[in-house]
Image (tube, rainbow, N blue to C red; front, side, top):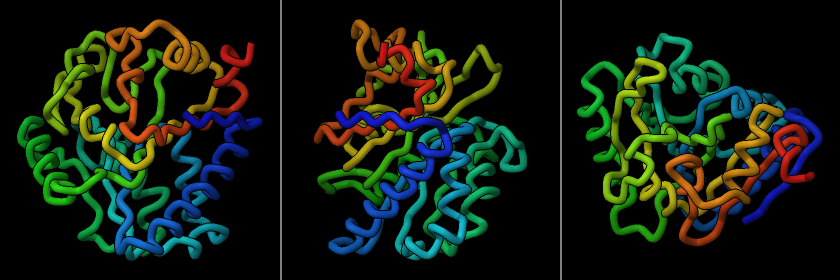
Length: 241
């Protein structure tokens, strides 16, 4: 595991933007595509805005990127809670990624059908490959959830399905999410975490007892150990003590 702490979300976002652009460039020296799973939330929103800016936009060969999402709320694309909408608003409408290479989780059908369709796309991309995504970006909730893997739900311990749907009772909404089996096969996984409300979760996930039912992010353990945690000082407060 690689863990780095930055002063605040601005420094974190800039350093991760540098890290991502270099990783994409290095990967495309030997491959003809780069596959990335995006996350929702406020921390990646600032990162996405940076990547779309003049300072970074021309450093990436967007024509070779293939975009996916880690999870989605089952709400229309026009709903501000939709993770894909945020990424389009802040990043994807500002960079030249071919439309056919952007794979949103569809919310115009039934949740189970949407999950099955998304898993089918992923099998088309990754079956027979050594790894799945080149990079998966993840966040962390103040209840230690990541993706839509929430405490107390069986989905946390899913062993077979790559994508699944379920009803999140706390929010009275369906969610679609990637699961640990596909994410842990990625080349690299990066957690981006900012804010003091996440400090306890960071500590428990990294250094607390192993209890994925209570701390779901603990199930993210990439098979090749390429796991990165990028934190700001507020999110790292408990581990630094």
